[in-house]
Length: 288
Ligand code: SAM
View 1 (cartoon, rainbow, N blue to C red):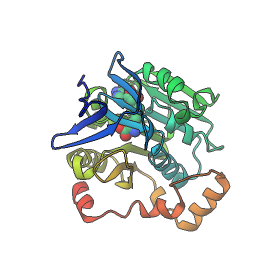
View 2: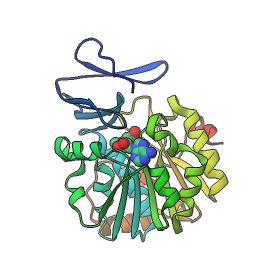
View 3: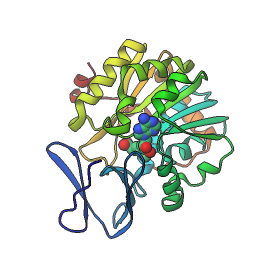
View 4: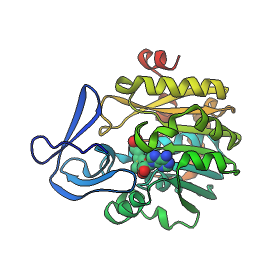
């Protein structure tokens, strides 16, 4: 477990990348300790609000998590149009479950998180992120390794969301061909797999690797983008894989589904949804 450097005193320095660091000023420290799997830290930053890091890497902030969570949930759910069952791998802070559960048509959400301490801690110290999601009767929380679960589970899901840490430490197994292959087997007809795939400008190889695997597995394999201020380095990529035609949904249909969903958002709109799949050449080259 890499200890987060502080530089100067009173700053959290994220060193996810070899030649780039991100420092956030700590105006108040809530917690800094090791769980069974990783080092969990929560502190207050005047701009981002409460920030949680795992092994020194920013996972979620109160101020900008809406962008990431809205784009990894409403894009696949509204593109699909008839989602009943959702699987979340990771997502310990509860933000992904919060957004999925806003869809009244979603009957059941299974969330598989390796580190129960992250759930426990975020429930008590970052309650705004999950906003009661862990109390929703539709949510089944499983504390297990997502890769093991995917291998052993026999259920099928309309949307699978991989909301994991980066491919270091416990998250590494969630970026492998075998994991993606098992995930595909868990998709119901027309089902969609979406993944947290890092910031292409700084983590291009990660995206290239996932897209290589997705192209071998899915008829429709691509990514879409959104910029999340606390995930430094430019736009973040979300992997997209499906055998179905969900990505071809037209604007009018998305607008109708979004209106009927009656969900308030601060980043997602049907227009943003479609535009997110327009890839600049430097990203298009990475996905081959
Ligand atoms: N938004 C963040 C990002 O983009 O990096 C992810 C946030 S969420 C807190 C990441 C979660 O993935 C953590 O709670 C971590 O414990 C969980 N995780 C890491 N490896 C896992 C695995 N193999 N199985 C299940 N959960 C895992």
